[in-house]
Image 1 (cartoon, rainbow, N blue to C red):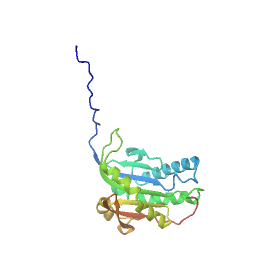
Image 2 (image 1 turned 135 degrees about the horizontal axis):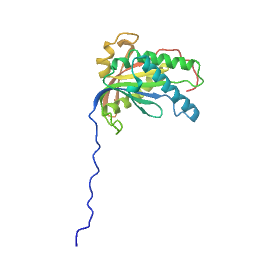
Image 3 (image 1 turned 180 degrees about the horizontal axis):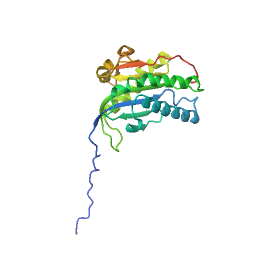
Image 4 (image 1 turned 60 degrees about the vertical axis):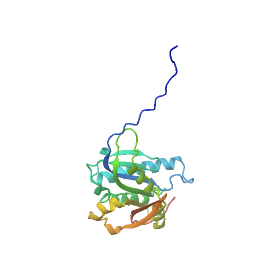
Length: 211
């Protein structure tokens, strides 16, 4: 009799597009899941986040439609193609974004507080999501206890953490409202890996409000 036993075949390997060296900008709304907020509050915050980001990107000379965006629920992952300068994510984007958040909070019943992180590294811009270590590193920075502590302790509305690579190769060489001495060195650990990053806190008055 012929052998009718079925042989298993391994699943196909994920096809990754060749990664490009991209800028990574990731944001996180502080207190997004706070029980004092309901679904309507969170919908308003998400709409506000998209508006302040698109406005600040456009004003900074970063074409929003040329960037790749991934909704994180409580924030947004934006991958900026290598044809757009990383320096624009520092100057003028950071002060513009801080000013936009401050303007919103002056007339808002629910105060927006935002963390962000900036990194540069290889990113595969395919249909498989973003499995690259560079994106994981940026996500770990924006979720780090160190960045949370710096923003919470400042009483301000917006803070960003940049990787050492971005600080040494971009921040130290930009000229404008953001200077290298506007950043504070931060040494911490993620798991058992020592990390050095740099934190910028936008200086605007605390308007109070909900979390």
